[in-house]
Image 1 (cartoon, rainbow, N blue to C red):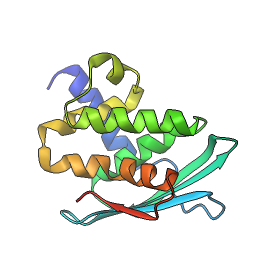
Image 2: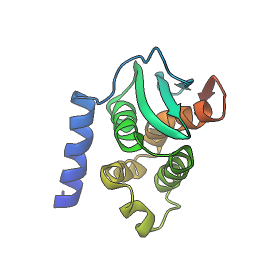
Image 3: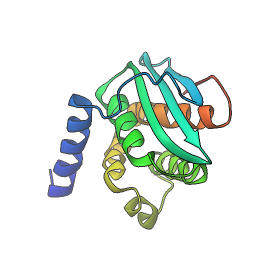
Image 4: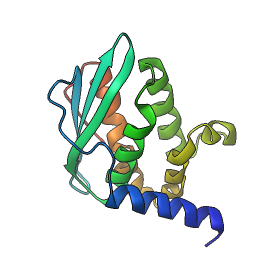
Length: 148
């Protein structure tokens, strides 16, 4: 394993063991549930938006290390960003995981780029994108979404 792969692995393991923003938010303005029927992952995303800016974001749920790490990375990265920036970042992450993103866009992602190794395991891509799909659903007013 090269140094970059090892760093990415450490980031994912750290976010799984110590997920950031793992809590139910009672005063959220946007909320959606995400389900991955293939593996049973279930994530709830809570977003608080004020004047078009994400002032708080959190998640709860049960899932594998990839699913939980991805949600944790997402919440850390999106706090303080506009809704438009969140949509753009979600699009880049989903494209990255499907292998359709260029290196410049991946460089913009910071620690989230750690998820690109998931592409080597196609069955796990839905685990990594679940929270991002739930985020997108919440921001457009849908209450739930599925990876199917």
